[in-house]
Amino acid sequence: MADNISRSNGINGVNNGKGYSLNGYRKSCWYEEEIEENLRWCFALNSILHTGHSQYQDIALLDTKPFGKALVIDGKLQSAETDEFIYHESLVHPALLHHPNPKTIFIMGGGEGSTARELLRYKTVDKVVMCDIDEEVVDFCKSYLVVNREAFCDPRLELIINDARAELEHREEHYDVIIGDLADPIEGGPCYKLYTKSFYELIVKPRLNHNGIFVTQAGPAGIFSHTEVFSCIYNTLKQVFKYVVPYSAHIPSYADTWGWVMASDTPFVVGAEELDIRIKQRIKGENRYLDGKTFSSASTLSKAVRKSLDNEAHVYTEGTARFIYGHGSAYQQNQNQV
Image (tube, rainbow, N blue to C red; front, side, top):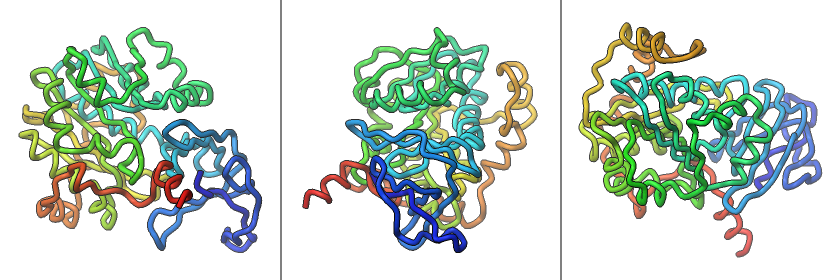
């Protein structure tokens, strides 16, 4: 596991490079993530709750001072207790609200259970299939993320441990919405092949019902970071679907703006007022983040990002994959063996 946790020398929280190992982490009071080669993001910890290693990924649950409990996989923060609702409401609700009557949903990934939790708030939803490749991550999240335990017990949820590509390829069912709640495309990680044109075209799209919608998380979408993968995921989906909507939101624990892309062969014509009406009609409880005006704002990207997306020519394939900064555990292990 990457050495992401370290002692502070007490001067503005600067890492002094000392400390000792605990299950691959240094036992200390700071979590540090290298966002870019010359940029690191760190915050104070109360404790390290758990660390582990699966066949595919390194896993840690941290109790952080600013963001509460935080799930870290392969040295990358996945979600934090205080602001995960921003990510998961943004991932789930735009697609479910734009669809005329969403009943059947397929989640690629989503092992922590938060995406399923948001989906199961819908009165219209009859069945949610959650397919995650890593059983240890799913079991880990069931045990430690109390907020999602009710979702895991919902009879409408079917949990499958398998590669999402293989599962979709062999299933005969079709779905109203397919959601990509996958780990970021990291070199050596298990998920980058699920962001390719061939996967979208040959596996995802044929499994959508009429009026079906596909939505995926699409990595960092900030002024400087959106060119890592966000812009080319958007352009790749444009090659497969007639209507594609990119949108973004700031997530404090990520230290960046994050992006999602929604795609369909049916136009997205629902306005802010109608979205609010559907929220009241369809969803149990109240959203903390997303409503009609919020989505209108989220899908209005800055001039710089719009221009970049308009000019993006790269199509994501296995041979021309782009990755966010960092490496998956398989890559690290290979490097260590050299």
